[in-house]
Length: 247
Ligand SMILES: NC(=O)c1ccc[n+]([C@@H]2O[C@H](COP(=O)([O-])OP(=O)(O)OC[C@H]3O[C@@H](n4cnc5c(N)ncnc54)[C@H](OP(=O)(O)O)[C@@H]3O)[C@@H](O)[C@H]2O)c1
Image (cartoon, rainbow, N blue to C red; front, side, top):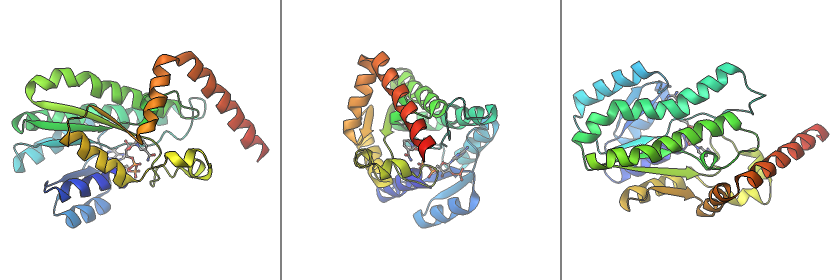
């Protein structure tokens, strides 16, 4: 669905045979049929299921050339809002899902080298979020993982890239508030634009791409003035709470 479907269409348009992974069989098989690709039902948070999927894929494709780590879910609130189970789930899917998938598909990527791994992280992986702490923490971890393995896997012929989208209206992330705000709505991009960034990352060996690119400034500010960004985020969070209280 969403960004992952747009990336699959873009890669299929380039002639790749795509093997699609997700939990829901019906939409997965429909997209695979549209693209002339293959569907593998798999929960990326389940390490054994990911390992078994990689074994099945390897029987049909001993080598792969691109792995896209896109599966993800929203947190749906801040630390105080979320049940412990939800925090575990967000971490298991958004962060560990990437780790288990890269680990399981590594032998196939090595056989396909030179090969590429593209992580769909987020601007929330680089900045202090206003209301979505556990989600942002999972995205910080996912992005740090991508950055850290680049040096380890480069000598094996595997190039590592991350794409950090801003708000993208999709089923799980409708971005209603962002779209309603006359300032923030300018940062909204389509899934197809994120997909084009994935192709750019692969074509030009870009280590990290922000979509839209001005969001890079927010990440830079976070690095330069983390205290100020944290205070700003806290203030915005309070004013949002007050706004909600007045609604
Ligand atoms: N939309 C945004 O504003 C935005 C911004 C920055 C980053 N991102 C990131 O972009 C990625 C895609 O999000 P999206 O907006 O395209 O959301 P989406 O439309 O809800 O799509 C998420 C996809 O991930 C799959 N998925 C979710 N949990 C999974 C699991 N445990 N195992 C396997 N597949 C799973 C879903 O399929 P099933 O439900 O069938 O499993 C679905 O195909 C996420 O990593 C998200 O964090 C999104």
